[in-house]
Length: 287
Image (cartoon, rainbow, N blue to C red; front, side, top):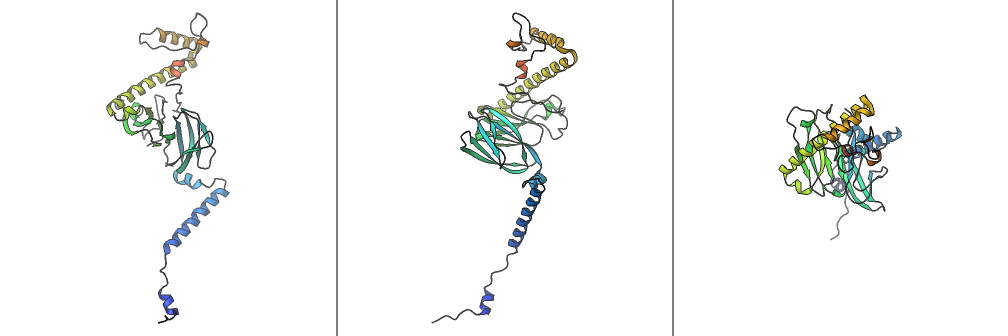
């Protein structure tokens, strides 16, 4: 039996229901595109909306591998970072794709990082273990000085999100007095992976490490103040007193600055105190 062709009434009955969500999505996409075009024409770039919504911050790139790499943030210029090196660079808020390559151009990994005001750390290839601690008691409170471990990051962890913008970066030390840090002070440090599972030992080790670094920082501040007030003669006296002290601590002086058979030259740099941990410099934070 032949089937009759559909009539006009039949076609109206099978008309699909309207889908207003498609209209809303289309309007939203057009709005985003228009906003990006406007910011581009104003010279702010296509990602300016991220700066408006999330602000800007810093990413601390930590390359603890044994080879030099380059890291590219979205479409920006790649940044070269030597083996066992580090680099701090501004980063737009929102989600940024970090692309890591070796020096032959081979892509080693890509990592998405989300930033919303506070800085982040990118641990290239997840080398070594890291620990995030709160050390506010050392700087901005009257509580007993102690390190409070917030989170540990085992080997393989790429991104460390920080709770605030006052940070002691790995192997660096803030000045003794930290102002404008109402939200607290965070500390990220590289630790032996065996310590990650031993919280009591980890806390003890971090307390000792930070206390020693603060002590060295105070010594540097004293020497710097004496250089400003009393000149080279005052520094020479300070160095002599330190080397004759009973604590066993000595202020190392480079051989090139020491006269043959004589005392250290006045004003000679203190290599032992200035080089805190394997050649990593002390961070100079604004008070």
